[in-house]
Image (cartoon, rainbow, N blue to C red):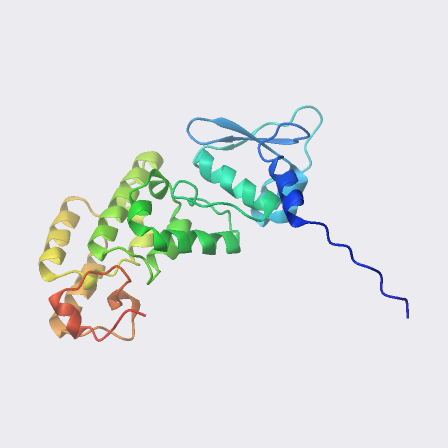
Length: 253
């Protein structure tokens, strides 16, 4: 048996700071991104991105041809959020705030931390420009969360604003843009007057499938939550109390 070798661990902080200095640094960079509506150039290093993230591995999988490679255009990604993702990939750490939690490129640990950040700062996050720029895939885990510190009525309004922005950008109907995410709205938590107002607004500007509103009315009519479905009647951390909630039999978990 060969003798065990000595493993030497250097200090993590100088290593992390050295890599942080390469974030958006054109020196030795071999890939350029054009990011956001302002089309800001962001410089990076192909090998590091590809080995750290499957998204970039697929995006940058082909070898660049001779000459200067063409920039990679990411016009729908907020610049500040993209830089935050790069910092996490380079250093395995990043300071999150409301402008930098919009995009995670499938990075599980970063996505979990972003969701937790938004759960703790729900009011501020929902009113930010970054929220309006979320993809449907990024919005889904938020709307599925029990820990959002926001009432359902405000969450419905935020979802409508998000869908309006997406509809304008994509030139598609609001209801079509909203379809992948609105099923996670817990309409049964709304009081009858709120649900009636939402139904009327929905006639004028379709957002939520009529069948989903009907299901919410059923919860009111039966005066109990449907435990088979669970989530549509389950309260979130920020749900404001309403008279009919005592009939749901589903407390916050």
